[in-house]
Length: 209
Image (cartoon, rainbow, N blue to C red):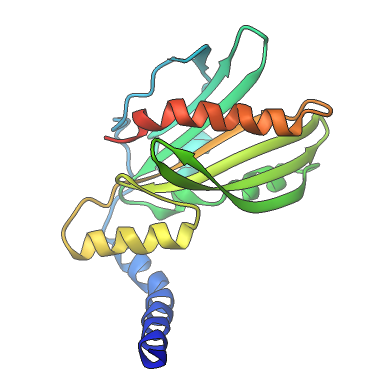
Protein backbone atom coordinates (compact mmCIF):
# COMPACT_ATOMS: atom_id res chain seq x y z
CA UNK A 1 0.00 0.00 0.00
CA UNK A 2 2.82 2.40 0.91
CA UNK A 3 4.60 1.60 -2.37
CA UNK A 4 1.47 2.50 -4.36
CA UNK A 5 1.14 5.78 -2.48
CA UNK A 6 4.81 6.60 -3.12
CA UNK A 7 4.44 5.84 -6.84
CA UNK A 8 1.37 8.09 -6.96
CA UNK A 9 3.26 11.06 -5.54
CA UNK A 10 6.24 10.42 -7.81
CA UNK A 11 3.93 10.65 -10.84
CA UNK A 12 2.32 13.86 -9.52
CA UNK A 13 5.73 15.46 -8.89
CA UNK A 14 6.94 14.54 -12.38
CA UNK A 15 3.80 16.02 -13.94
CA UNK A 16 4.14 19.25 -11.96
CA UNK A 17 7.81 19.60 -12.93
CA UNK A 18 7.04 18.97 -16.60
CA UNK A 19 4.03 21.29 -16.64
CA UNK A 20 5.91 24.52 -17.55
CA UNK A 21 7.79 22.74 -20.35
CA UNK A 22 4.58 21.41 -21.88
CA UNK A 23 3.01 24.87 -21.67
CA UNK A 24 5.97 26.52 -23.39
CA UNK A 25 6.04 24.00 -26.22
CA UNK A 26 2.28 24.13 -26.69
CA UNK A 27 2.11 27.92 -26.50
CA UNK A 28 4.82 28.34 -29.16
CA UNK A 29 2.74 26.26 -31.52
CA UNK A 30 -0.39 28.36 -31.04
CA UNK A 31 -1.22 31.92 -32.16
CA UNK A 32 -2.93 34.38 -29.83
CA UNK A 33 -6.67 33.75 -29.87
CA UNK A 34 -8.52 36.41 -31.81
CA UNK A 35 -11.95 34.89 -32.35
CA UNK A 36 -14.66 36.33 -30.11
CA UNK A 37 -16.88 33.22 -30.24
CA UNK A 38 -17.97 32.24 -26.71
CA UNK A 39 -18.90 28.55 -26.35
CA UNK A 40 -21.61 28.98 -23.69
CA UNK A 41 -24.75 31.10 -23.61
CA UNK A 42 -25.24 32.81 -20.27
CA UNK A 43 -28.57 34.68 -20.11
CA UNK A 44 -28.94 38.29 -19.04
CA UNK A 45 -31.72 37.32 -16.64
CA UNK A 46 -30.92 34.71 -13.99
CA UNK A 47 -33.70 34.20 -11.44
CA UNK A 48 -34.51 37.75 -10.27
CA UNK A 49 -31.14 39.16 -11.36
CA UNK A 50 -30.87 41.25 -14.54
CA UNK A 51 -27.46 41.73 -16.16
CA UNK A 52 -25.72 44.16 -18.45
CA UNK A 53 -22.31 43.83 -20.11
CA UNK A 54 -19.34 45.91 -18.94
CA UNK A 55 -17.03 46.88 -21.82
CA UNK A 56 -13.38 45.78 -21.63
CA UNK A 57 -10.44 47.69 -23.08
CA UNK A 58 -8.07 46.37 -25.72
CA UNK A 59 -5.32 46.41 -23.07
CA UNK A 60 -7.25 43.87 -20.96
CA UNK A 61 -7.70 41.59 -23.97
CA UNK A 62 -3.98 41.84 -24.70
CA UNK A 63 -3.11 40.88 -21.11
CA UNK A 64 -5.46 37.89 -21.22
CA UNK A 65 -4.37 36.97 -24.77
CA UNK A 66 -7.98 36.15 -25.62
CA UNK A 67 -11.16 38.15 -26.21
CA UNK A 68 -13.44 35.30 -25.20
CA UNK A 69 -14.47 37.11 -22.05
CA UNK A 70 -17.75 37.89 -20.29
CA UNK A 71 -17.82 40.73 -17.77
CA UNK A 72 -21.33 41.44 -16.61
CA UNK A 73 -23.08 43.29 -13.79
CA UNK A 74 -26.24 41.68 -12.40
CA UNK A 75 -28.66 43.64 -10.22
CA UNK A 76 -31.80 42.53 -8.37
CA UNK A 77 -34.88 44.55 -7.34
CA UNK A 78 -33.32 45.38 -3.95
CA UNK A 79 -30.39 47.04 -5.71
CA UNK A 80 -27.85 44.34 -4.78
CA UNK A 81 -25.10 43.85 -7.35
CA UNK A 82 -23.13 40.75 -8.40
CA UNK A 83 -20.32 40.97 -10.94
CA UNK A 84 -19.80 37.93 -13.15
CA UNK A 85 -16.50 37.42 -14.93
CA UNK A 86 -15.90 34.41 -17.19
CA UNK A 87 -12.81 33.93 -19.33
CA UNK A 88 -12.46 31.16 -21.91
CA UNK A 89 -9.34 29.89 -23.61
CA UNK A 90 -8.22 26.93 -25.66
CA UNK A 91 -4.71 28.02 -26.55
CA UNK A 92 -3.36 30.40 -23.91
CA UNK A 93 -3.10 29.31 -20.29
CA UNK A 94 -2.14 32.82 -19.17
CA UNK A 95 -5.83 33.70 -19.46
CA UNK A 96 -6.52 31.82 -16.22
CA UNK A 97 -4.25 33.73 -13.84
CA UNK A 98 -5.65 33.83 -10.25
CA UNK A 99 -7.94 36.85 -9.57
CA UNK A 100 -5.99 38.04 -6.53
CA UNK A 101 -3.22 39.20 -8.87
CA UNK A 102 -5.64 41.61 -10.56
CA UNK A 103 -7.08 42.91 -7.29
CA UNK A 104 -3.80 43.43 -5.45
CA UNK A 105 -2.03 44.66 -8.58
CA UNK A 106 -4.53 47.50 -8.93
CA UNK A 107 -3.21 49.06 -5.70
CA UNK A 108 -4.93 50.03 -2.45
CA UNK A 109 -6.37 46.53 -2.01
CA UNK A 110 -5.54 44.01 0.73
CA UNK A 111 -6.34 40.29 0.68
CA UNK A 112 -7.66 39.49 4.18
CA UNK A 113 -9.11 36.01 3.67
CA UNK A 114 -8.38 33.12 1.33
CA UNK A 115 -9.73 29.58 1.60
CA UNK A 116 -11.51 26.83 -0.30
CA UNK A 117 -15.18 26.19 0.45
CA UNK A 118 -17.56 23.53 -0.79
CA UNK A 119 -21.34 23.50 -1.26
CA UNK A 120 -23.87 21.34 -3.14
CA UNK A 121 -24.87 22.32 -6.68
CA UNK A 122 -27.29 20.16 -8.68
CA UNK A 123 -26.69 16.92 -6.70
CA UNK A 124 -22.90 17.35 -6.68
CA UNK A 125 -20.36 19.27 -4.64
CA UNK A 126 -18.65 22.34 -6.03
CA UNK A 127 -15.33 23.45 -4.53
CA UNK A 128 -14.53 27.13 -5.03
CA UNK A 129 -11.95 29.61 -3.83
CA UNK A 130 -13.30 32.19 -1.40
CA UNK A 131 -11.44 35.50 -1.16
CA UNK A 132 -12.19 38.61 0.87
CA UNK A 133 -10.55 41.90 -0.07
CA UNK A 134 -10.37 45.15 1.83
CA UNK A 135 -10.68 47.97 -0.70
CA UNK A 136 -11.05 51.76 -0.45
CA UNK A 137 -14.73 51.33 -1.40
CA UNK A 138 -15.32 48.61 1.22
CA UNK A 139 -14.88 44.85 1.57
CA UNK A 140 -15.52 42.65 -1.45
CA UNK A 141 -16.30 38.93 -1.44
CA UNK A 142 -15.05 36.85 -4.37
CA UNK A 143 -15.81 33.24 -5.30
CA UNK A 144 -14.04 31.65 -8.25
CA UNK A 145 -13.18 28.28 -9.76
CA UNK A 146 -11.79 26.70 -12.92
CA UNK A 147 -13.36 24.40 -15.48
CA UNK A 148 -12.15 21.95 -18.13
CA UNK A 149 -15.17 20.85 -20.10
CA UNK A 150 -17.76 19.90 -17.48
CA UNK A 151 -15.10 19.20 -14.82
CA UNK A 152 -14.71 21.81 -12.07
CA UNK A 153 -11.63 22.57 -9.97
CA UNK A 154 -10.75 24.93 -7.16
CA UNK A 155 -7.09 24.33 -8.04
CA UNK A 156 -5.55 26.00 -11.09
CA UNK A 157 -2.91 23.25 -11.31
CA UNK A 158 -5.48 20.44 -11.32
CA UNK A 159 -7.32 22.17 -14.14
CA UNK A 160 -4.09 22.56 -16.10
CA UNK A 161 -3.15 18.89 -15.63
CA UNK A 162 -6.60 17.87 -16.84
CA UNK A 163 -6.24 20.09 -19.93
CA UNK A 164 -2.79 18.64 -20.65
CA UNK A 165 -4.20 15.10 -20.48
CA UNK A 166 -6.90 16.19 -22.94
CA UNK A 167 -4.24 17.57 -25.32
CA UNK A 168 -2.25 14.34 -25.11
CA UNK A 169 -5.39 12.32 -25.86
CA UNK A 170 -6.36 14.57 -28.74
CA UNK A 171 -9.44 15.93 -26.97
CA UNK A 172 -10.64 19.49 -26.53
CA UNK A 173 -8.40 21.72 -24.44
CA UNK A 174 -11.13 24.32 -23.87
CA UNK A 175 -11.04 25.67 -20.35
CA UNK A 176 -12.49 28.56 -18.43
CA UNK A 177 -12.37 30.44 -15.17
CA UNK A 178 -15.55 31.66 -13.47
CA UNK A 179 -15.50 34.47 -10.92
CA UNK A 180 -18.33 36.16 -9.01
CA UNK A 181 -18.00 39.07 -6.63
CA UNK A 182 -20.09 41.42 -4.51
CA UNK A 183 -19.51 44.08 -1.90
CA UNK A 184 -20.06 42.91 1.67
CA UNK A 185 -22.78 44.85 3.43
CA UNK A 186 -21.99 45.79 7.03
CA UNK A 187 -22.88 42.90 9.31
CA UNK A 188 -24.17 40.78 6.42
CA UNK A 189 -21.14 38.77 5.32
CA UNK A 190 -22.97 35.44 5.78
CA UNK A 191 -26.00 36.69 3.85
CA UNK A 192 -23.84 38.01 1.02
CA UNK A 193 -22.04 34.66 0.78
CA UNK A 194 -25.39 32.85 0.57
CA UNK A 195 -26.45 35.34 -2.12
CA UNK A 196 -23.47 34.39 -4.28
CA UNK A 197 -24.02 30.67 -3.69
CA UNK A 198 -27.67 30.98 -4.71
CA UNK A 199 -26.64 32.82 -7.89
CA UNK A 200 -24.06 30.14 -8.69
CA UNK A 201 -26.67 27.39 -8.37
CA UNK A 202 -28.82 29.15 -10.99
CA UNK A 203 -25.82 29.95 -13.19
CA UNK A 204 -24.15 26.52 -13.20
CA UNK A 205 -26.42 24.81 -15.80
CA UNK A 206 -25.48 27.47 -18.38
CA UNK A 207 -21.75 26.79 -17.93
CA UNK A 208 -22.02 23.22 -19.22
CA UNK A 209 -21.81 22.99 -23.01
